[in-house]
Image (cartoon, rainbow, N blue to C red):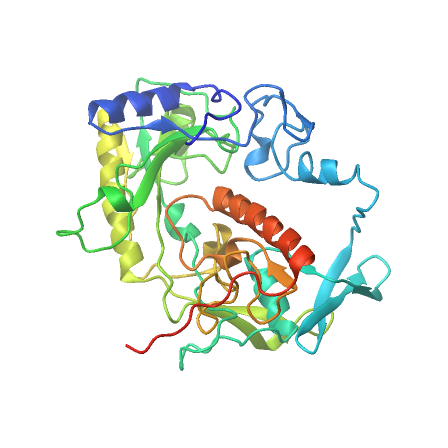
Length: 414
């Protein structure tokens, strides 16, 4: 960090303290995760007040009704609403970016409550949906050349990556006979992590994978029933299951890994030739598979997690089996999907420049993890935020000066 965080860290739980103690004794370098949950009441530079977190754990998969998370509702939107030239139109579903002679002229949207269609003129269009939304909207609007995995040409839809949820959620779990933890309190970013196995720290000479991974122990708030874990070998029903389930309810914790993911040539997005939405437009089609690289890195990470749990004193440890049959499925899309409208310096292989401005239409900016050419082992949120600030600087510069903000790199003969 170039400067300190504006707030102190969140509370340290018993599981976090145990993880830190064990990993430090093993020679690793654990640290508390940075969090958008407020550890204390805070007024941000725009004058918006964000409440202190009460550790109710609701925010891990939902919003924060208490206003204790630095999400857009309590930050940028609250500030924007104070200005007379800002209007928020809920229930507006954008179906097309309108353009003429190589320039965007506005957007077409449908009011989903009245089903009335509107054309909204604009001097500048900002596409700020999720990875799938950004990609699909450009494809539907016929902006940019669609990616062709066979010819390896085109830019819109290429470099699909994700922290495969059906691998990330296969966690190594430890069960403790003599230790109890209350994991029902928590927050969306409460935990301890370490970078000792990240890309720059690993010697890959003897490894069967590239890239790296992070290991972390979090306390996000365990829910009843779907956190009803028992050690390996215990039946999943019957009297023994009931007894062990009750006994280990507050005596288990998991260690998680999250690895960097490469963009493979045949992992991409395009418009589905068959299925359509309620407006008759093609749905987005995702074509992807998990590579041996991904399986191997998770297998290695799980062994390191097992060693940590042994050091923490777990009496029983369950290590998920990573088989060659584990493949990409719909659950894989749950974690940090990136790519589709990637950033670069060459219009032939990228869609936006480093201001997130489209090479093919200079008054359109596309914001989000859709611009990531690859996916690191870290969560994408901070980088997306930084790129959004960079893009806003570019938009101001564009409105003042016009034209392409960054010229494409000239090709040189090799």
